[in-house]
Image (tube, each protein chain N blue to C red):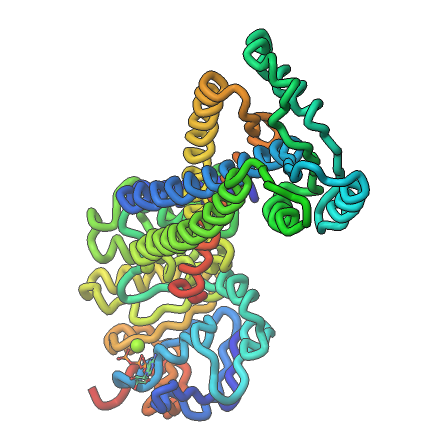
Amino acid sequence: MIINTIFYYFREAATSLIRNSWLTVASVGTIIISLLILGSSVLLVLNVREVAADLESSLEITVFLEDDLEQERLEQLEEEIKFVPGVSTVNFVTKEQALENLKESFGDKAELLSGLEEDNPLPNSYTVKTRKANMVPSAARQLTELEGVEQVRYGQGVVENLLALTHWVRIWGSLALLVLGVAAVLLIATTIRMSVFARRREIGIMKMLGATNIFVRMPFMLEGMIIGLTGGLFAAVMIHFGYASFLNKVIISLPFIQLVDDSNSIYQVLGGLLGAGFLIGTLGSAISLRRFLKV
Amino acid sequence: MIQFYNVSKTYPNQVQALNSITLHINKGEFVFLVGPSGAGKSTLTKLICREELPTHGQVIVNGRSLPRMKNRQVPYLRRQMGMVYQDFRLIPNRTVFENVAFALEIIGASRREMKQVVPEALRMVGMEKKLNMRPYQLSGGEQQRTAVARAIVNNPALILADEPTGNLDPDTSWELMRLFMDINSLGTTILMATHAWDIVDEMKKRVVQLENGVIVRDEEGGVYGHDH
Ligand SMILES: Nc1ncnc2c1ncn2[C@@H]1O[C@H](COP(=O)(O)OP(=O)(O)OP(=O)(O)O)[C@@H](O)[C@H]1O
Ligand SMILES: [Mg+2]
């Protein structure tokens, strides 16, 4: 019984999709575009988060100190630094250590720096870490104010730009998604409306013969679901291959950047796209049937 | 089988189509519903299949009160009756077989069941040789016989026919009436709204006459009217 009816639903849905083929293609296309935008925004945000987290652990503030500070003042300054909101660790680096570090980073060209020991131009400094990357800018600003501090340095701009970028991706991504999502839903609703319209006589006959509401509506619901799932499938496949090739390029040209590449997260995104397509399709059908198929 | 108690129907545009109708139709009866255009014949049949609800009064079909019936039960009510209309109401892109089978498809029947039952119904109406033709390839009489086959394929207890001969020539109309008599003789109740006075006069069945939404005559073995 049920099997026969399910076959019937699919047959009818397929007939309608083929009959309104240009609208079907347009609806599927709109869904693909919306979902591509959704997918890339999500991946972008995920990646920016990953990179930010990466920076978070490596980002430190260097507080250069004025020369000739008394030992007492140095100790007091360390306490003051610890009190700056967001600060997690403070390490004192003497000018001698600083020179050593510099030499190390020069590697085999370290002899270029020989002779500097007698009159070391590097200042004493504190290396300060914050608990989170987004606390760096405000902490740095407050550190500048402290007495005895000559200069404050950190990966200036990087963190701010990164955070601003996520912010904008979120806002514009959501906006584009909203507009395209609504367009996709409406286009599906139109497609379903056309199907209902093409079959209004048939629908009357079905009701006369004693068809249940579900029986009348199901083929149309299915139609929207098929459109949505097809769009979701195409978008997921495109994102899958597109992102894989993007990752490959990044690994070759920017090997030090850590991007999201675990298949779990990626499959979650792809599954989400499929689900979003299904949702859009179902919603479009439901809206159309509510308005145009009073049973 | 059908009971109307003081039934009135006023459409939303304030037209009163039926006014305090009381009517009983028993199982197995053959009843003609006659009366001038706008008398309320179609409205009465629509109340029986619950296409419309009465404004006042009680309509009972097969022991069930239609005003109290829930919307989702209406399909099951309609499966107990077959409907035949002037305009046949066949699905254009389906064959004769598929049109008749559609009534079974709706209730979830399998292909095998359809292949058993549909040819029987088509044989009953004499359409067994044209089962692969589509409605546009058929004459009006053949289309109507297909519609009758669809109406009886579920073995309904009641046939509701609203001017079924309205688009048929006299000979074809008589063919259809003979078919209805056959169906009626097997125990199916038939209620037929019609303007075909010659048929009504000839068949001498029960005649219910409506005028301005009121029953003005209800007689066994009646004729269409005395003024035609
Ligand atoms: N859906 C509707 N909305 C408003 N008024 C209606 C509706 N259906 C019928 N009417 C009115 O109700 C009255 C009875 O109509 P009905 O169709 O029952 O008459 P009838 O006896 O079947 O006529 P005919 O012989 O021409 O088919 C008419 O005045 C008609 O205009
Ligand atoms: Mg009428």
